[in-house]
Length: 221
Picture 1 (tube, rainbow, N blue to C red):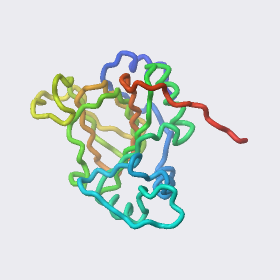
Picture 2 (picture 1 turned 45 degrees about the vertical axis):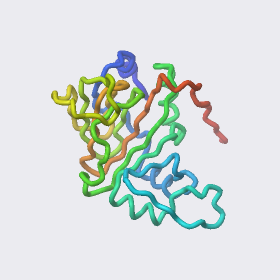
Picture 3 (picture 1 turned 180 degrees about the horizontal axis):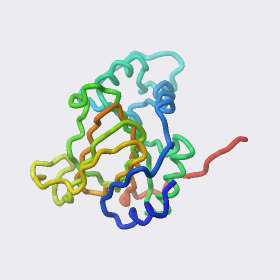
């Protein structure tokens, strides 16, 4: 799924945007299954972009009490965007992309699933321009979003410290299904949902310190 063309671009470790590159690796229906499977929606893997906390009563047969009840999710997802981490083996296609990226970059890779069904985008977006410790390949799955990348690396600044960013972004593009962007570590960027949106970010972290996950894909038939 990672073409030779994309491979060569990633190896340069420079920011880029490429349209129409990666398709059909995940879907709204698969996300719906995740959200309804309560063990997946725990407070370490699932994150709602809101600044308040919730508690809920214990319920029968739960092996993990720190998992979001679906009725509460249904309410909050109408107002806030959200994301999953630790999803590199969510399906075989996503796992395969992680295999390829780990061979290209040789750094542990994960998959983070970002999504928003919110109509009021301004209220739902809490990710201001920021930088990350990882290199990120972002794949637009569904919907439209705006990606801005600045030619500005973090030099003694905190990830959310942005008051010194003044110049025009070197990349300012509209992402549609199949499009990808690559954002090197510590480079400032901003992703803004323009519609109902689903995307997957593949972070590659050279400072993780652990071996990559076992990428064996178990098949029973």
